[in-house]
Length: 54
Image 1 (cartoon, one colour):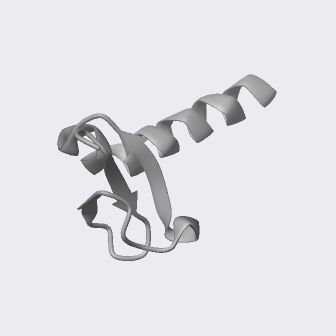
Image 2 (cartoon, rainbow, N blue to C red):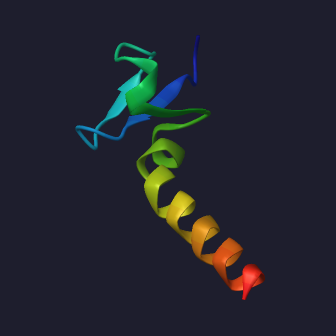
């Protein structure tokens, strides 16, 4: 599928198409750039949720 990008949390690499085990992947994302920033986005969301709880 076109635009099927995944961020591998083990290697910190972007994969086009799901080639690794699902437990190591975040996604899918529509673009390589979006997948590249997946971890940053997840960290920002977690920080925002922690702030809401306080």
